Structures are given as C-alpha cells and as structure tokens.
Amino acid sequence: MSETDPDIAALSFEEALRALEEVVRKLESGEVPLDATIDLYERGEKLRKHCQARLDAAQARIERVVTGAGGAATGTQPFDA
Image (cartoon, rainbow, N blue to C red; front, side, top):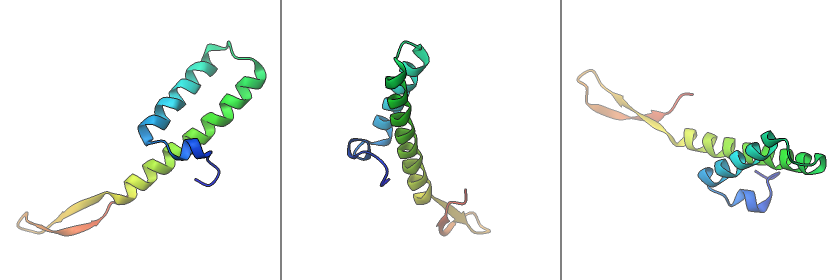
C-alpha cells in the first residue's frame, strides 16, 4: 500500500469501500468536470487497490479446519484460494 495516500491507508475496508462507491456514484453522474473526473478516477483506483489489499490480507489469514476420518478436527491449514 505504499502508493496509497496516508488518508486512504488509514481506512478500514468498509470505509474504503464506501468511499469508492461514492467516487463511482459521482463519476457515473456525468456532472463532474473533466479535471475533477480524472482526480476522482485516480482516487478511485487507489481506493480499489486498498480494498483489494485488505481482502488479500484477510484471505491469507483464513484457515480451514481439517477433519480426520472420524470427523474430529485434527488441525488447521492455510486457506487455498
């Protein structure tokens, strides 16, 4: 997330997603001047990357329970994407 603005880096996934949805709403309205549209698009891309990084980090932490023949939990292993 080194390319991310400090204000974006501090956002939770949910906050970043809401901000990204707002950017998309503004862009889709077609009422934003060209220069502002470019700025919004750039911010939206940074927000998208931040959200993706947060999702990737969460996925890496997910573990699935491995069960033995009798159905009892025998341990865990990393989630396979």
